[in-house]
Length: 304
Image 1 (cartoon, helix red, strand yellow):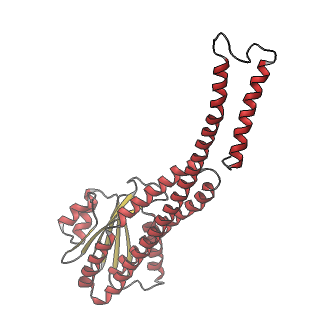
Image 2 (cartoon, rainbow, N blue to C red; image 1 turned 90 degrees about the horizontal axis):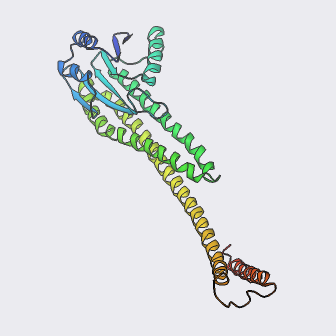
Image 3 (cartoon, rainbow, N blue to C red; image 1 turned 60 degrees about the horizontal axis):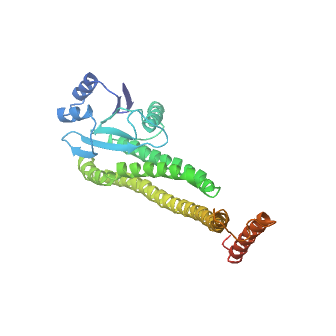
């Protein structure tokens, strides 16, 4: 699907799951190098920046946590940025791009804001919106923290092991996906300054600042998760120790009782007490005395 937006002399073309013919037509219209056109038709493993004579080719991957997409956890967006045009290509519905296109279209019609005099400014606003969305994705994780903490102290430690593991997986994937952004954004600043001029470098540094905000929030969430995991593990260990202590006490109490029952149940010719009047209650009394003595000793030691 091809969506086209204009602002004065600037053109933004958004390609969502384009066909080979659609890509070829757009590439011919904007004189895009065939090598770049080929890369648009296949996913890439790593983000990058390439500087061509008449455009900048930027590839970035963005994570998604709050909902699943056809491409899984990772979403790729390709940017081809010329002096007066920008082409974005993606194979998933990118919510932040969709929302920005509405704002861009309204501003274009009403001419409410001064976007800028070259397409680099459109790239700036798109990237700023994308990093803002990443912050919102991390807010989704923060809401999970708010649910996990009371559950940990509410006796649901075992259930929280799975919940914490899922969040840890999400944060780890998030970190792995955005880790290369710093290097790519540094390269973009060099290429963008060379292509659009020194004055534009401020806006590119601002994008790098947006990345650092997201990275800082992510690191904070990972530290919070580590604290929650340590707390949960401590409570689980304490609960397990209590169970083992209870089992040990029961074993300690039942052992002498079993020993007494075994001795008096032996098939011997003569066993003291056995066979006399009231022998049963006498044996029960011995067992009860031993049991109460053990419990009293444990109580005094504060083991129970």
